[in-house]
Image 1 (tube, rainbow, N blue to C red):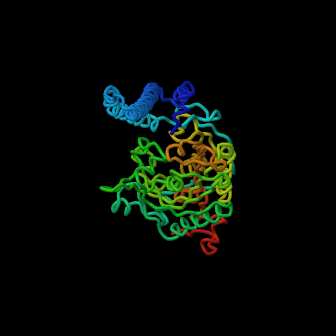
Image 2 (spheres, rainbow, N blue to C red):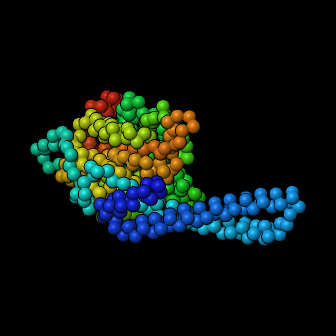
Image 3 (cartoon, rainbow, N blue to C red):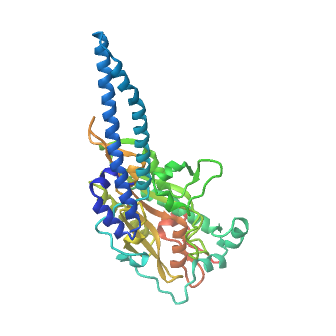
Length: 427
């Protein structure tokens, strides 16, 4: 979330940010926050004044008693002070809680380079890579390929688990794990520290990463327990340092997490209801960085470069877009999407999301750094990016590498992980 001091000192900038994001309804909440914050500071000051008065009277009583003087009037003054302090402290806590509730629902400040827009149609294309494949036959989509060659079984999955689940079969299972293993080796060679995180997280941990109101349609809750299924390794990697202080010479910290991800996708009605592109479970290798504010924008480009290099090594054509204000989400200050070309759909689709969240997550999760011993702490910047969501990569490979004879070419970088196999034969 935004630091209350920043909001207090820059209210006009925060108002303009809400307008850019298409959230004018939150301006009223911002004004209420500023009013509550003012009352909080005034009440806190009044409580401090009463405490000083109490200490002064206590001292006067002690001095009067030493001298054998009358303390009745002083004792009468002192009687009402504790109750007054208690009432003020209760108001301080109440104002603070209300301020924090509003802060939790205000979005991050948008970087100046983010284009203005309402939705993903307004995202700004920055570049394209690779030649689109040319076929002397009508290319199939991944559902047709998967079902025709007994590589994907959607019908059985729907029967045993419901919509947006799947069985991968035979060589597609091996291809999926080849992508995971290659992804881990690829990012390890970039000097990222590998983690396999817990697959369940407490509510406060997820709330440190995202605005929970944004994720109500996404997160699976374990009934009767304070546990949620992991929606992305990003949240667990952030939590490694929650409520902690990192020494300056440790930064940047480069982490990579591999995990299954579980999402309701309740807010995606009518989109990709068939196939394995948008599902309730998938595997992902995720990049995550803790950084100083001075280095975070350079590292944002590093994350994007890593993702591009990975997809180039698969020889999958893609484009990079700068995500507009209306499609940015609450947490990111700036986000790039890498969108792979899918011949079966005849369009580019998102396979990588690469975000600089600046200090937004760090404030929520209380992750700070210290430049030197006894120096005041500052909030780190956090950044995250998909390296590969493997089921989406499988879709891109099936559709881009299909051949007229029904076989599927396996990208060269993955062949080693599949025992030297160069293609998936037709059924």
